[in-house]
Image (cartoon, rainbow, N blue to C red; front, side, top):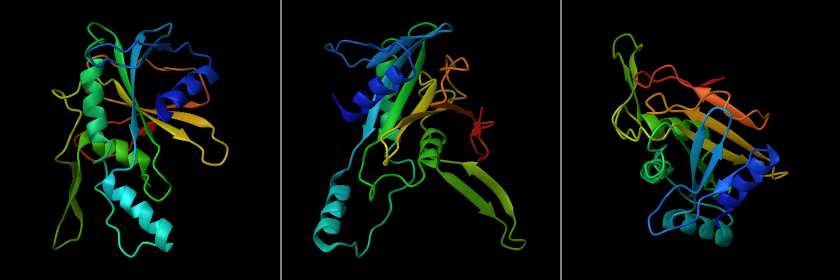
Length: 215
């Protein structure tokens, strides 16, 4: 069992929601499901670990106490495969009106984990940010999402929302930040979980660049 799966179990235990584990079989299916008074939700948990480049970076920090040069990865790049893989697994069980929630937890070291996790989720879902600025007036002419979208009206619609599990590095407390997918086949019905540890966000448009609004 991964660290993220253990934290997910602990989180739902703390908010007093019955989390049911789905037995592993020959095919990849979601990890868990919950049944609220509104709907049944299948949950797939994904964990972001260090890749080989990031492991080398940590080794350099350990050996030298510093890093001479490091290029930050493209925002959203590490989260996109997690969303795509989760959608394939959620489709195995979300066959009628069930909702699908992918929970992502970044368990990388302080030096390698995302500095902008909400932006990471947003650009992973809706695509890279591209801003067009007028040469003459210096004003912004367009601010949009462009390539590398994982959630559209045709793609990964089984993912009702992307949840970001955040663990406080000081006391280990957990919070879940749920970002609704406006293109979902079956949306999550709000409020999803009646808890001060769970937060929900929605976005007005996935065409023009914008911010998630807390519900």
